[in-house]
Image 1 (cartoon, one colour):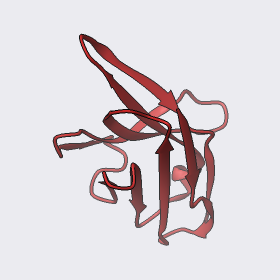
Image 2 (cartoon, rainbow, N blue to C red; image 1 turned 30 degrees about the horizontal axis):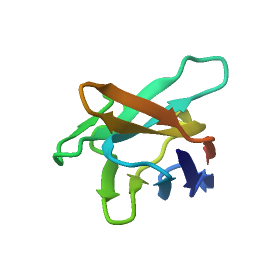
Image 3 (cartoon, helix red, strand yellow; image 1 turned 30 degrees about the vertical axis):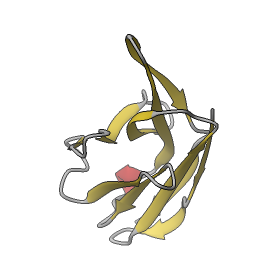
Image 4 (cartoon, rainbow, N blue to C red; image 1 turned 45 degrees about the horizontal axis):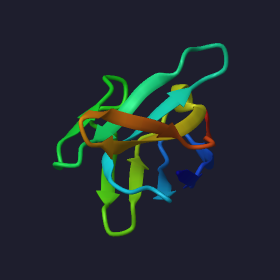
Length: 118
């Protein structure tokens, strides 16, 4: 399984960015989501999209970020609006591979840096 994330960068507070993550060499995808890790902090849940279409968000991003997925392209997106300096972090995509009779196996992307200046 390979995950390729892109879309990070430097943006001013109040701006927007869109992250994308494409999975390849994977047979069946379950959940697709995003986590982030700021310097000196633990990795934090950001958002997740289930294979059935439901979504869930971390409290700190709810109402500002939107997760979506294109199943035909095995790609998950994270639209980030109204960005704040505290959103600065390395963002990691997480994709679950469905395994019959067993919990899905989760894979991590390489991370993409998002920096929000004040």
